Length: 321
Ligand code: DGY
Image (cartoon, rainbow, N blue to C red):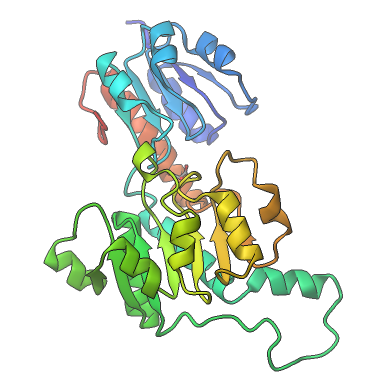
């Protein structure tokens, strides 16, 4: 029997490529070249499966040009690079990689919150630049994590992981806002209280964004929302670029409208709004919230498992359609 052909659009773990090669004829991008959409389409033509990451767009144009495609497996929990409706119409299965990254990503959200509130990178840059000549009582004074109020926008699995860390580990009061309210059992487990978005923005000392990106969540945080936040507040975005209006955030930070921000994701990444690069009270990381080797390996293996299942006539493990 001839093996199905698949495209692995980005470089991944060699052991995952080797697993895929047991089942498929694999064309992979182990040099991690950046492809134009045209090049991507050209490589995808004639393939039954695609192993994608968050930067690889699958939309009606790609689908129309690649009629052999049966499944696209995203090595990411977020899937705003997929037009799922167009995929469903074209009879292409879409899968993502949930669960395996939840705790790692929640760890990182918390790390970014702490680095931001306690001014870790700003003070480290100062020290490395040789500027530290003496200790002073208010040098790089930040804001407390313990005992403060953590507001979480988006209370899926990762949001819940962050809530547990805040409530159980740091004695924070946790409030959250989500499209749908959690069950009473989950609220008790996370020690989290449901509030409206405006109340959350007005009362939280630290606002953590963990909601998925969609046209409806575009600029969930813009100038109006930032103006509701406390001047001492911290904003952390580990969700997706585009959920925050980065230009409005840069202005708010520069004006001291809020105290600080921690950003792992950016509008139009890997480009970063130039003003964010020069403002001291912002901690910037290059979309690494799920980046530990065991977690990235688990994400890649889950994407591979989905491809293997679907192209051998079984059900996808984590289908989106
Ligand atoms: C995800 O899994 O969605 C992360 O943001 C990595 O892309």
